[in-house]
Image (cartoon, rainbow over all chains, first blue to last red; front, top):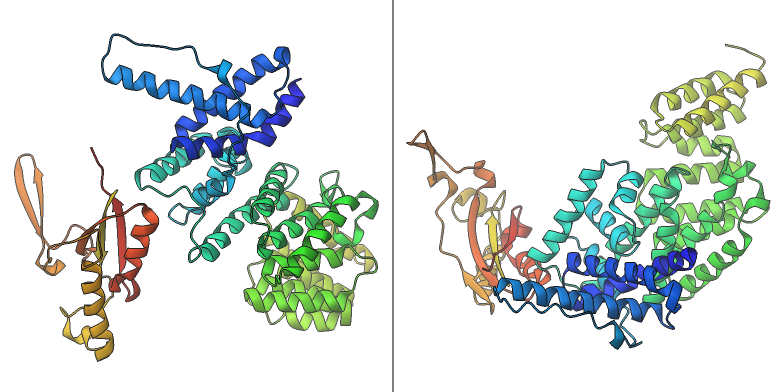
Length: 399
Length: 119
């Protein structure tokens, strides 16, 4: 029973809260009412059975609780002695369908008048149902800091009257970019540093799926979802005993084939909708990486397109890797050596690998040391140390 | 819902400094006047009174019952408020759209949008 409730909580929290915020116009009141409704459900459903439409039941129950509370507060404020505390009208709960207002909620949470870190926290709290403690842990921030961030953001939404709505046509493109950036940021936080923060990945996927369902004709939304699905499909293969396993060395049997197929279908839909934004291109690259053998010239061409779209030297670095595979390490190295990314450890580790392949061991070793001096993540450091050690053995020199 | 829009000129050329003002073409100068006029005539807008230059400001503090004055604005000259207006709007998006139409915002200054507390 607990697991069914957990599942309902995961599925319904965002929907229920969005409907309540839409109805009540107040984040805090809505959150309290939703929590109360879920608590009542936990108490009753095991005996009475799960209602046919759990979401509608929760919204109605929460709504009645909230109305009751407002009434009580008003009565108190009016200093009336005839405090009428009615028994909540659970008996009247009907399975009235309620509007899905998650889209309004996500656009409100990702309003550009809020700082990005506040946007991220709000989205995870309201749509993901994560607790403040969980969000604080995921972002390595002290709990009081995260709590204050959420309080301040909710207060600003109310005080400055940030609208609860999907932005009008002329504002939509820019606002959608902001929403997708938040989802991508959540994904990246979880994806780049698992397993500790891996729980953020399912949250990002949930948000991506919800957006794709709510905005079915937006190619960028599909592109982002496809990209996240295709990258996450490799999750089980990316680490072995907490050590990073590079793409080329991954056990393909550990890849989630079903998710790759689903991700590709979403990508095709994005392409059919005319998508050519950075998310779609990254999804296409991730899709090509799932092929065996890999089509390196095509991957290099897509990185070139992505570099043009983003103007990012980091993308150029990825292109250099693909070019090295397609044409040879010398061609890759020529691109790497043109990049102004001297403080980026991946630049040096990539250089090191290409130099190693060219038999330039001394330079390769220097480049690995340079990368080691810049790396922060422990798993990344151990990977570099292994590579450096292998280089010593391979060239027959120990120190 | 009422908002106060505080206009910070920042590096925006204004007629107060003729040299900077001359860097704008005649058309641009006309556009600045026309835009401010259009904003003041926008429904919901209550134009602010004209503030003289931040250089003319006097900042007052009271310490141990003694009034202390310093020359100039509370913040740096460049960060000082140059003007303001009130705007009655449905929500923050409407206030942001109006703020974006204020010439100072595109000429090197910035607009601070502050909700007015309704009691």
